[in-house]
Image 1 (cartoon, rainbow over the protein chains, first blue to last red):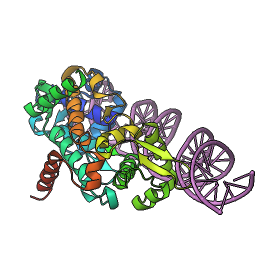
Image 2 (tube, each protein chain N blue to C red):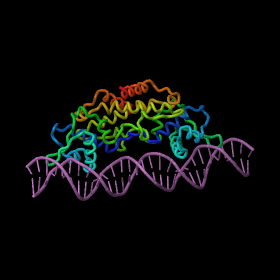
Image 3 (cartoon, protein in one colour):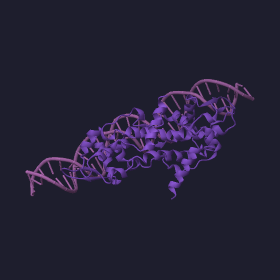
Length: 152
Length: 152
DNA sequence: AGTAACTCGACTGATCTAGTCGACAAGGTA
DNA sequence: TACCTTGTCGACTAGATCAGTCGAGTTACT
């Protein structure tokens, strides 16, 4: 149940691209320093984002990285899936293909519901939302509830 | 974003205990065979559940494992946390103590919302629900939505 | 031609995963 | 009391994943 450094870095770099002037390439080194990500590692990650069709690249001097689509059409889930594969898995298999016996039969549905709830956040928040600092209402409500939960 | 074998096994074994006659110890070997879990590994897991106060044990002949609380008072989240630590973490730190700079500032709230949505499922479903095969309404709704999503 | 950028694959140390194993402790029964 | 059944604990391990690092190569602008 953890977000790896790789996924975290990927979303942060993508958010930085979403905040940049559209059409203008951003250099890897700038992404690395502004988000404090080791450049070599970041390059591996950006390569995977490019293969997934999320970003484009421009080589040579004045080159860099750009989003391949408008920022509002790329969700956090898209970015995570590009670098980590499926959003949710139990022992490596997707929740919908699980089968349990005995008293745990209903557990399969719990995992499906878990993935659905995860999606209700990650599939809805776009890079544009993050760059603007304005999350969708349903997500803001969850954040507010979470804070109420922590501070009684 | 994955559930490990350990967490999966823990919940399944706990569900099996929830389905057993209350007050009657269930032997480790029975849990292992009925859920197809390697016995040696399961013992490690049950030990952690006991340390967390989720199950009790009875030694000697006719001994075994029992829930330490009524099944309806133990959530799936409780079981997972007992064997895996915090439900959600980014690079090992809890979502509420993250701090990002620049374009990714709002990302911290996304992780908080993600955890909240995870909780809205895992904290709500109890072992009794799973053993009975009757999940809470809000969770059933998520499962139904998920199926609608997959089969258009 | 030169240089500033991305591109790719290989490599690495540390940690985690999913177990296994053997010796031991406690409780019930004959 | 002896014995058998069952849980308890720690140590160990092969393999995968994580989080990087590094060096050599390409591409495109000037």
